[in-house]
Length: 190
Image (cartoon, rainbow, N blue to C red; front, side, top):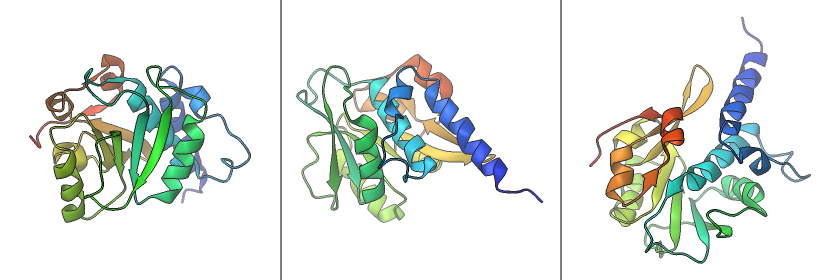
């Protein structure tokens, strides 16, 4: 029987994967309040930061701030705020905005993080941002097949992500080849 160590080792490897993208190390710098945040949440926040850094938005997207929109996940909001503190994305200061309802104004969102939601709720959020330059990220590899753009999933206790380049392109965005090289590539959902 395995002890808890392999799980810790797996998250350490996931953290190293997050660090493979240049600029990730500063995003993971800890302060006293982030020590309490679970490693899994910090790794996801580092990935979100790097997804933003390695994605190009069309020139007409909102320009003054880079807005991470987080749906109903206070813990992710807090960890992401710590991760992006003092950073920039393409010269723009990043901010995190908490969302609770799909009918809220989403026009300032660049990246929309959806926690695990039921299919109907997820579909409502995706419908609201369809055909807009909003990078959608959620849990589950199937998310990238079913209308989303990036889906986190575990493979042998390692955090991975799947990207649907077709969905990203249809929204007028482009991801770096380095980021795509680290991803599991999906299609569909269009």
